Image (cartoon, rainbow over all chains, first blue to last red; front, side, top):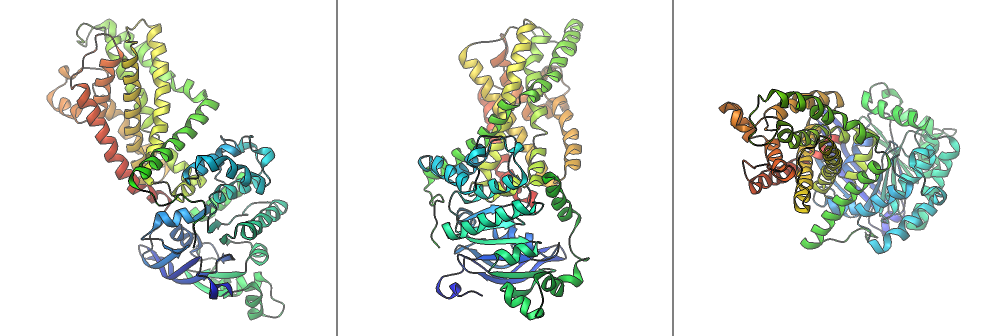
Length: 272
Length: 271
């Protein structure tokens, strides 16, 4: 996977992780390791099991079988410790438009238990890091989509999490905002040493950011490796789109459901 | 993996302090939003105004309902306050479905805040809205020359029972939302619950004139205990049937039970 994996314990590790909904197996026997300090991309068509995997890793959903550890903590036995060690950015634009940027951050600083003494400093740091200092006291409903996304990343990083989970972090953003978010994610990894696990449908994003990519299809990991090695496996001129189609293309019409699609469209629609 | 900046593992007293802080953080947000956009409060004032100005005045003239030494309007004022609080709180659960659809709930569930603090935080937010109803109904009652008790203890007691009732019914509403999980189903269930809760309580007629079966239902209805407490604390000459201690105990234990149940159900909404 990664050279760091040999010297440091993985930041995220799953063994046989499985989630069933009735007769449907959304995630099946998922075993993967995410090296500490790396950016890991989880790709796959709608319904592949990416979001279900993230929900299990962030303790929102109990696994049906298997184990998962985040920052060294078991997601079933030590869910609170897992939540203390991670940050999460939802696919939807979830910042509260009726509050200012500062107030949004203040809520999460309090919920993450950042002491009163450190709170203001951490909020101002996060705003500055994400380039939002000037807009801190503006209502979020007046922010652009890219600013909201940066604010949400700021919310998730104030407590200096070891692992950051991002569910399609740039869905619906224009290219300028997308590149800005990418820069901030790299900065988070470089400056704070955070491990980043993100799902995405954007092949350019996965190629640009990820050291390791796993492609999921119908609940299984069907390919895993660096972007370069995955492309080389498919063909000398292959790009990541070709890799994705090669491993998941035949099943695109089978996956996804109304709620997944509606959620993505709702986010895109809010971004205009 | 070292934890950086996250709250440390807590002893019991620190855990309680954390719980209170998380709960208040959520209620505080609601207060900010309400302060910034109070239009909702004004629109919510219309319904209790209609009950007091039209229903109360007409029924008061009929003298069909025996209310002892007090006028019917005085008798029903605490009931209308409780009803107004109920009507806000019982639909409060839809906010959790809305927050799920916006991704806010997922973010909250990903924080180390206890689920019970998330639930109680929302319940207290409903309490804040309930208090605003109390303020409006006090103004209406003053305009109608209803004899109100203005002693500090009585007003603090009214505020306490408004918050307690709002918290209880909003938590009940949240638990329903966790089970039904869609706005359409929730609205249907909410409509079904509201009127039976109201009409099986002592809000607009005393227990003494109810047939035995309705009296039994009324005694099982938490709204009756809220009305009973408000009646003795809010209006001059108001008398408690159950006793303030029992009113508080029923509402408080009901709230604790519902918070525990709803905290268990809460993650269901995002699954």
